[in-house]
Each structure stands twice: as C-alpha cells, then as structure tokens.
Length: 344
Ligand SMILES: [Zn+2]
Image (cartoon, rainbow, N blue to C red; front, top):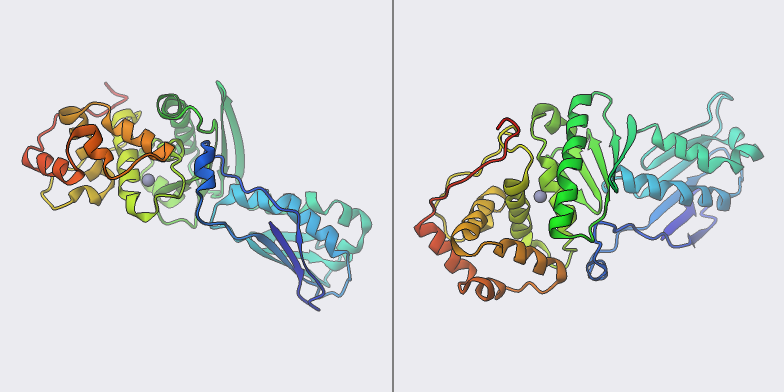
C-alpha cells in the first residue's frame, strides 16, 4: 500500500492502490502466508514550499510507479517514508532525489511536460544514487548487481558474480527447485555487517568485501538463505539452526573455502553449544552427517521449508534428542574435514 499526503496545508490524506510486496525468495506460497510482519507502506509527504498548487494526485502516481521498485532493490533499510519539497529556486535546478527525500523546482514542475514525465525524472534521479547496475544472465538464472559504492573493486564484483553462477544453481537444484532464479546483489557502503539475504536480495558490506576480497563463499552462505526460504514463522528461536545449516552447506558446497580462508573451529565443550550457531553448529551438523545419519541435515532443511519441522524431528530422524546428539558429539568430536579449494 502507498500513502500519499501533503503537509503544507494538510490538504489530503489518501491511499493509492495497493502495491504487491515482493516475496520472491519464498517460492513456497505457504511460507509467504505465514509471514508475520507486514512491512510499512510507502508514503510521500509533499511540502509545497513554493505554493505551486501542482496536482498532487499526479505526483502520487509518479511516486507509486517508481519509488517502491527502486527501494525494494536498494535495500530493506531504505526509507519507506519520503518527503518531497517543492521549492522556489533558480531556473537551472530541476529535481534531486535521495532515498527518503525529493527536492524539486516548483517552476519546473508547473510545466505540463515535466509533470507528465515526472515518473521518468524521478526514476532517473533515484537511480543516480547507484554507482552502477549490471545484469548478467546465464542458463536460466539472472543476477542484477547494484553497486552503491563508486570505490568498490571491479575484481571483487566479478568474483562474486562468478561464484553466484557456479554455486547458486546447484543449491537450487539440490535443495529447493522452487527457489527464485533471479537474484539481486547490492553493495552497500552504509552496512556494517558482512552480508545478509532477504527475499531475493543479498546485501554485501563493501567495507567487509574490500577488506576480505577473497571471501567469495559469502555468496554460498547467503545464497543458501534464499534457497532455504523458511519464511518468518519460526521466529528468533531457530536462527541458530538456519545459520548453522547455511554454514554447513557452505562447508559442503562452497566453491573455494580454502581460498576464502574459511574453516570450521575446533570443538569446544559447552552445554547446548549448538546454539552458538554458524560454524560451531555447522561442525556439529557435519558430525551428525558423518557419524549418525547421512542426509539428516538436508532432511531437516526440507522440513523447515515445508513447515513440518518440530522439536521431535531430531528424535524421529536419529533416535536421539538434540541435547542427546550434542552430548554424543561432545563425547567424541573428532572429525575428518575436507575443504573445497580451487587450487587442488
Ligand atoms: Zn546467515
């Protein structure tokens, strides 16, 4: 849904036609229905400082046709509320836009042609915030690479794209053939983590990638999150399991874990240590795969996706509770690990 309201005289407050929120990461319709949190609607407040009395409905249509698409690709932290200031200014200035804020010259906007073409002008103005956009297609898969950092190393970009085409189609065909074939990578200067996936988009921190350019199997971990598509029904309690599976899959199918300087940590005794998540859990899962039941973690991934996973799943599949499995692992954690490498 999109809200539009003008603020100068608080003339009107109305809703424009609903906008279908993209949830393409959840190929499984059931997961989409279980989505818990509705995202905020997109809205625009028009502050007509120049008192142009321009047709706000037309501005609303132009906004609806451009901003949600831009913001969806830009990142989920991208502001959903936008303020447009119509100002009285020098002739040469037309329009400028950053996420959450539009400034437009009132005299320019009063021109019928400019108002009629506002959607295109807005679209261009917003996309100027991106340094580059590249689309690569191969064998039924596509990747849109949005780079928001003009200092981002082109070699890293190339390596991330190559890793995507090497590993992602494999993950889709092995674990979830309903997962999307169309993925968006966004490099973000403002993001302080490593990377994260939501819907069909993977957000990379350019600070991290510039510092650790060899860590290309971030794509494998995040790509697995898209393939997992568990939806939001499990809440925070099973984040450790989701992350553990993503790292377990990275361990097994990463294209170059040695080159990525990525290894599983040695075992440390700790009650319920599996909750440490990520690589600690991944090592435990590899132990289950080798010593208890091959394919069990993949079966759990499937159950998480189709909504049948329960606490008793551990017992159903292995005869042991999760804590019993961890206790058995703690008693004999020795494992032979083999890491992928492009140099072998
Ligand atoms: Zn993750």
